[in-house]
Image (cartoon, rainbow, N blue to C red; front, side, top):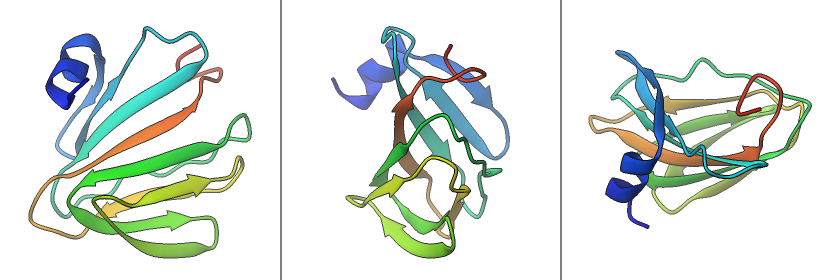
Length: 111
């Protein structure tokens, strides 16, 4: 499925001056979430002990805090996040930074 079709099927769960976040409700145990992070903005960042997470960057460039590291990211990069590690994405560019976050649903997000 392409991103346009995904957005038609997904639920827009956040839409503000920082980003848009779309979650796909049709899977029982796995969340596939698309974030479109506006230029020069950052996600709030978080950690969750309940699940690991994988970030797949599909458009733009920026940086990602992942545990004790900050790494440069761009379209095509994959970043695994261990459960319990704080993670946050920063858009350092003039264009939207888009990425998928894939994780097991947990209480407070998807369940």
